[in-house]
Each structure stands twice: as structure tokens, then as C-alpha cells.
Amino acid sequence: MPATNRKRCLVVGLGISGLATAIRLRRIGWEPVIVERAPDRRPGGYFVALFGAGLAAARRLGFDHAIPDRSVPGGRTFTVTRDGDREPGLGFSDLAGDRRMMLRGDVESAAFDALPADVEIRYATWPTRIEQDGSGVDVTLEHGGVARTERFFLVVGADGLRSTVRRLVFGPHERHLHRLGYMTAALALPGPLGGAPPRDGISLFEPGRALWLFPFVDRPHSLLFSYRTDDVDGQFTGRPADRVRAAFGPEPAGPLLGRALDELDDADSFLFDTVEQARMAAWSSGRVVLVGDSAWCVGLYAGMGVSAALAGADLLGTALDRHAGDVPGALRSWESRLRPFITGYQRTGVRGRLFFTPDNQRQIALRSITARGTRLPVIGDALRSLRSRSRVNRERDFDIARGSSSAA
Ligand SMILES: Cc1cc2nc3c(=O)[nH]c(=O)nc-3n(C[C@H](O)[C@H](O)[C@H](O)COP(=O)(O)OP(=O)(O)OC[C@H]3O[C@@H](n4cnc5c(N)ncnc54)[C@H](O)[C@@H]3O)c2cc1C
Image 1 (spheres, rainbow, N blue to C red):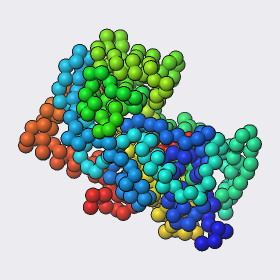
Image 2 (cartoon, rainbow, N blue to C red; image 1 turned 30 degrees about the vertical axis):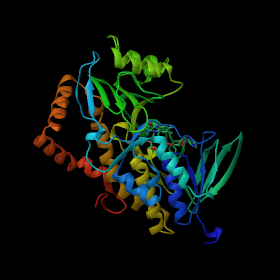
Image 3 (cartoon, rainbow, N blue to C red; image 1 turned 120 degrees about the vertical axis):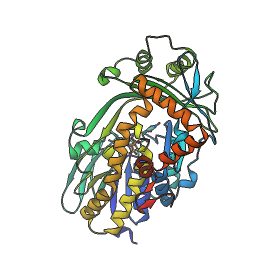
Image 4 (tube, helix red, strand yellow; image 1 turned 90 degrees about the horizontal axis):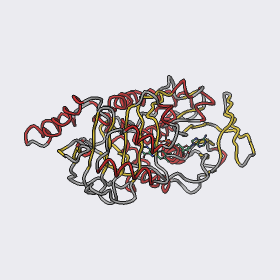
């Protein structure tokens, strides 16, 4: 196809949504230009899971083979107390279905390597104004203190939870972001954590606060602290490591929790953020569309952030290809197909907060009973079978573009 016939499209954000969108649009003959606010790639991140819905999309996008599965085969999970008592626990490895576990950077790097070399990337660049008419979108882009306006056929906002595209086109963050009242701190440990066997999944639960140690087959644990708070804004005052320590006090931390808190103290940086969801009445307006966390951030507790980003971007390319010449029609069709799944993931994201951070002793006790049951011969099989047929698992593994289970 001659270059003049290609659809020039602006993708804002070089995260997983932006990369997947650019790969998919390039494949259908479009000409994506990616702008990224950071001065370079952002390959960082901690533990993420990739479920069937995302794996199926990654397969079609051509990079599933480059995403490692770092989960521990037959891995054991324990729940511990501050004093060091331990008993069998429930972890990610107990979730049924088609899933891999890795670091976010594994997916970012697989997607980046799959991006065709002729896709233009501009770092340290971001939009400051977006205006559209019936045939295109004028975007003012800022780079190095210079603002320049360019015209695009379509603009894709893939710029994350606090999206600038969403703010410029759909209104202020407060209108779309919903806090769940929880904070998380995450760190991929640089080395083994004393007292934590490297291949074991370990968690510690107390009402409204939890520590998770996610195991990998080939690298040290990834740490996740999760806690409930009535004062999210107050959590952003002072040092994040001190906030986490205060949230897990005032009782003595004990050996494992104490070492985990020390790791945060010593880390150069770690993820520290409130858990939020983006909830929007519509993900597009004319020729501007949002994809990934900017549109629907399902929240950390859904475990579907990366999978939804890949599935949404993949389906967007399919819809634009099928409705060639009718962008609004393509975007309507894309959203009506995708939305029921995202709504389901968001529901899981709200309910899942109690899986990650039980609210009270009763939930902690119930979890302990379920974990023991899962290890009994007959009851364990029955529980696993129930779990694999649950709505949550069916949604996680459903290949949205193909319209069937990813395992089928
Ligand atoms: C550095 C990093 C680490 C992460 N770590 C984890 C993790 O450990 N576990 C987890 O579950 N999730 C993590 N996430 C979130 C997870 O990657 C997302 O939920 C999921 O991949 C969907 O991502 P996204 O591409 O929609 O948004 P994001 O991953 O947030 O990517 C958005 C991109 O847009 C860029 N951007 C933002 N504003 C602008 C702007 N105005 N102009 C241009 N570019 C802009 C950002 O720099 C970023 O590169 C992380 C995200 C990032 C950026």
C-alpha cells in the first residue's frame, strides 16, 4: 500500500497498551506514531499474571512465545504469622486456567521487540491540546519546550491511569477515577529474602493488611504490601516506606515482615500507589479512543491489567480493519464487544480486594479452611473444578476477538 494511503494514527503512551495497539495497527496497514512522556522506555514493574484472554491476544500479535512463564511448577504456598507460624495457603498458583506469571517488564520487552522497526517513537513528548473535526484530529505535541500541531486520522490514548488524553478530551481525572480505599507497595527483590524459601509463595494476612511474596522459578520473590486506608491522600505525605511501616504497626513486625519492610527502606524505588479503577460511560469520542488503564483500569486486584490491555488493543485493530473507512462505527463495535468483559474484570477487581487483603478474622479463617480443603484428595479436586468453571475464570480465559475460550 503506498504510504499516502496509510492511516496516520497517534498513539500516546509506550506502555503495553500503546505497544500492542501500534503493532496491531501497523499490521492492518496503518501508520502509527508513538509519543511517550518519559525520556526513554519504561521497562520496570513487578509481579503480573497473564491469563488466557491476554495470551490469546499476544499470540495473534506475534509475541506470546517471547513472554516467559516464571511460575514455579508444583509450587507451594504458605500463610505465615508475624511470629513465624505457617500453614498451607492459597496463592496465584491455585487459580485454575490458562495463565503465566512474570514481571511486567517481561511483557513490555516482548512487545517492544515485536514492534516493527519503521514505527516512529518520540520520547519526552506529550499532547497539550486535542481538537477534532469530521475528518481528523489536530494534536499539539510538546517536546523540548517546543509545541507543534499535527493532524492525525485517529488518536489512541494509551497513557495509563492518569491519562492526559482522557483529561483533554473527556474531562478531569476525578470524574472517571474511583479509589477502592487501598494502597499497595510492590518491589521485585534484588536477592533472596532471609527466611523465605525462594520457590515458595508466602503470604501474611491481618485484618485490612497483607504481605505477599510471589515466587518465580528463576529469580527472587516479588513483594507486595496491600492495606486498607480511609485516608488515601494522607498516604502520599512523607516517605512511602515509612507509610507502609506505619500501616503494619504498631505491633513488632517479627522476622519475615520485618525483613520485607527493611527491603522497602533500602530500595532505590518501588511502586507505591492507591488502587483505583477508571470507569467511563464511553471510551471514545469521535476519532479519539482510550485503550488500557486510561479507559478502564481494572485495578491491581483483578489481576487482569496486562491481559485486558493486550485483548483490548488486539480487538481494536480487528474492529478498525473490519469497518475500514468508518472509524466511529469501528469504535462502537469494538466497545460493545469488549465492554461486558471489562465490566466483569472490574467486578473481579472490586471483589478481589478481599482475596488480596482480607477485611477481618472471619475471612482469614475461611481462607485457611479453603486452603486446607484444596489439599485434600477428593475435596481438593472438587474445589479446583468449581474454581475452573467459575465466572471469573471463564472471563479471564475467554478469547474476546475469537469469541471462545482461549483453551478451546
Ligand atoms: C513503569 C510501570 C510499572 C508497572 N508495574 C506494574 C506492576 O508491577 N504490576 C502491575 O500489575 N501493573 C504494573 N503497571 C501497570 C500495568 O503495566 C498496566 O496495568 C497494564 O500494562 C496496562 O498498561 P497501559 O499501557 O494501559 O498503561 P501504563 O502501563 O501505565 O503505560 C502508560 C504509558 O504512557 C506514558 N504516559 C503517561 N502519560 C503520558 C503523556 N501525557 N504523554 C505521553 N506518554 C504518557 C507512561 O509513561 C507509560 O509509559 C506498571 C506500569 C508502568 C508504567
